[in-house]
Length: 250
Image 1 (cartoon, one colour):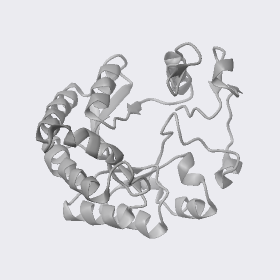
Image 2 (tube, one colour):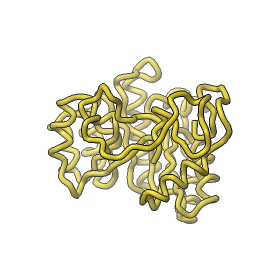
Image 3 (spheres, helix red, strand yellow):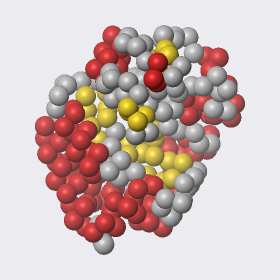
Image 4 (cartoon, helix red, strand yellow):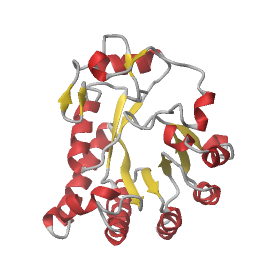
C-alpha cells in the first residue's frame, strides 16, 4: 500500500518516499520495518540498507508458522537460515529485533494452537537466544499461554505490540520486563482505553502497525486525536502531498 498497490491492484504511483518524509518531518527519527516470514525479513533488510533511519526485524508470524516452517518438513533448515540472516543483519546494525512472532488464537484457521506454540518456543530458543535480540511479539486472545511460555523461557526484553488484552495480562507482561505497544487497534473499546490508561509510562510504546490499525471514527479513542493530515478518501484519488484515508502512516 505504501507503493500505491492495494490488494494486488495499482491505484496510484509509488509514494513510499513521501510517506517516509512526512514521518521524518513530524519528529519520527527511526522506523522499524516488521517482518512476518524469512523472505519478508530479507526484503526488509534490503530496504533498511537504503536509509540509515530504517531498521528491520526477523521472525515468523504465528498465523504463518504452518506454511513457512513446515515447508521443509521439520523446519530446521528454515530456522537455521533465519539465524544466519539475523546474525548478518545484527552485525550490520540493521536488524534490531526478533519478530513478529507469538500467538494468535483469533485466527486458528491459518495455524492451530499446537503448531503456533511449538514454533513460538523454537523461535525463542533457537533464534532470539542465539542472536541476543529483543522480541517483537504478537498476541491475540492468547495472553495466559503467552505469559506462560515467556516465563518458562526467562524472557525479559521486548514489546508486546498492538496490545488489546486485559488489565491482568498487561500487568503480567510488564512484570516480566516487557513493554506494551499500542495503536488504533488498542483503542477500539472503552475497556481497551481503561487498560491503556494504566500502562506504566516507562513501558508504553506508540506504534502505527502501518498500513493498518488506524484510529477510526467508530472507536472511543477517536475523540483523543489532536492532529490530522490532509487525506483523500479513496486510493485512486491520491495526489502528491496527501495521505490516503485509513492507510496508517508513521
